[in-house]
Amino acid sequence: MNRHLSSALHAAQAIPSLLIVEDDEALASYLASVMEDDGFRVVCARTRQQALSIQPQPLVALVDLGLPPAENRISEGLFLIDALLANEPHSKIIVITGQDEESAAFEAVRRGAFDFLCKPASMDDIKAAVRRASLFLHHEEHLSESGEARLHITVRLANGPKDSADAVEEQIVRGTLADTNGNVTEAARRLGLVRENLYYYLKKYGIQLHRA
Image 1 (cartoon, helix red, strand yellow):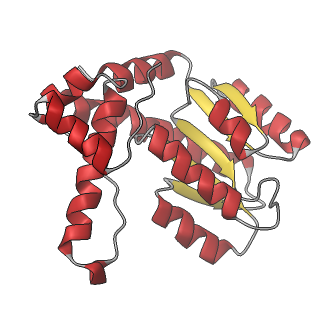
Image 2 (spheres, rainbow, N blue to C red):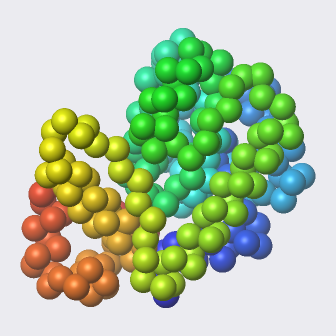
């Protein structure tokens, strides 16, 4: 069984974990209270750095794209999406913003966001999005148990098929390492590689091992 993803998911079935990244403390407190009443264990962060310091990282996140120190731009939120998915490729990230919704939605989805909400979003819409992400995450466990993985890749087609192949290759390696909690021996076994070959891919894609 996929130990890392499975353990997180089994824990989530009892008390699902949710990361809320919102610099408006009053709004964050309100969202946390509502989602806790809805059965979630909530952790909050105001900045990208605070969010990335939370361990273990919840696999479902609600992220405001306009974060300090660039509240009027979406850059900090996009950087956070990149980092959260690099740490936990299975993460389901719901972004919420009131800034240039169409371009923000496009870029967030391109980066791998699971869903997108525009401010002002109703609590019913937010709760529905979080539940949908949690359900999706839960069903991915069954794929993992059967030796399958769902991938999300974004590549420029004009760069040719090699970019696509590399993107798939990197995501498979990163996802398998996340599933095995950084256990190189187990990851290599699942990928049908010897350890030395897996280290080649770690170096090729600049993958750092972070064991819990």
